[in-house]
Image 1 (cartoon, rainbow, N blue to C red):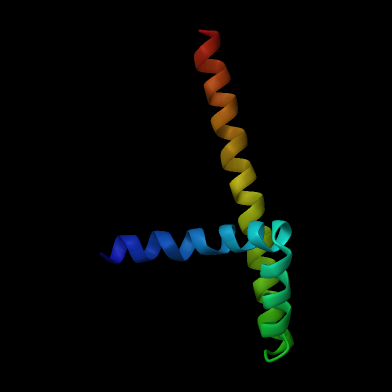
Image 2: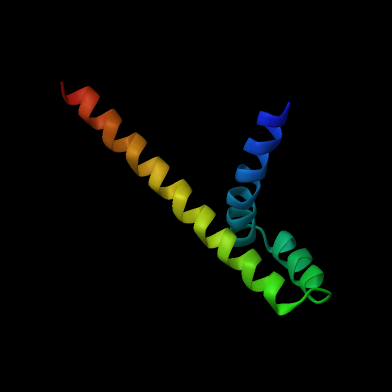
Length: 73
């Protein structure tokens, strides 16, 4: 059960970053929640979201490159 919690803790920022970019309603709720938070928390939230998006793109890139190489053999 701890492993599932750990995985969801890592997946949440990735999903949150993408949701922030793609969903105007999520973005509005996030901005409203940020009004009650410190600047440090907001910067951390943005940083984790950006890192999560970057990591998800890297994973997709690696999967595509590996798939391409396997298909080329």
